Length: 89
Image (spheres, one colour):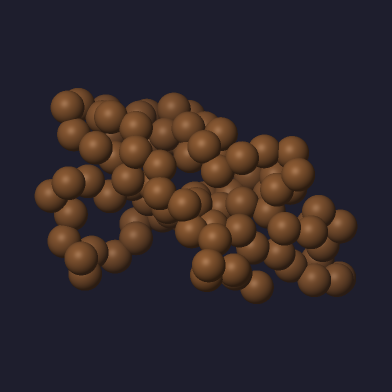
């Protein structure tokens, strides 16, 4: 289940342009192994200033971290530094 009212936009700078990450919260139910973690966070893309409104998300990431143990900013930063910067090189 995704809580559509909880999207957060994070904007780190990448090569002189804004990189927009959208962070959402979600949860899964038993018998999924992560059900015990309740609400977790996921991160979508980045999008850039020149992205079109109809651009598709190229990736969705989650470390399956509980909302109680992380923040939208931390998750977006982790994706930016550990995945996207390596892919964009």
